[in-house]
Length: 162
Image (cartoon, rainbow, N blue to C red; front, side, top):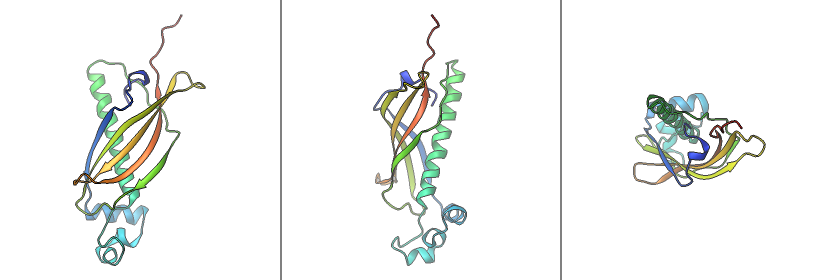
């Protein structure tokens, strides 16, 4: 995030970008991280409940993270170029409700977005707030394929010293 906690608006939507999944990258990711047959070959996938080669759910999650980081970097660079102060992003205390709603097949283009769902002021760390989001991935047909809820610490705007 580049925006201070106080400036973030509940309900705000951020499109993080899109990614088209190819057979080569699906197989490469699965070979390294999720070597299940339906992620490794068209032949094995044809015999599975999926019917054809599909991406690992962890691959769809990794692409979300890649696009999230890229979006944050781009927003930060644009803010710096405008001479704006930039908030520090903190760590995430975790996520919940991860769902792979529909298979992601070769050639599918997934568009990812984040919707701000809640802001919580931190009582133990007054210089930080927690921002909760609902995160989505939709295929080229507008069908949901991916979802999770996340939380991240975001720096609060510095207060003038008394």
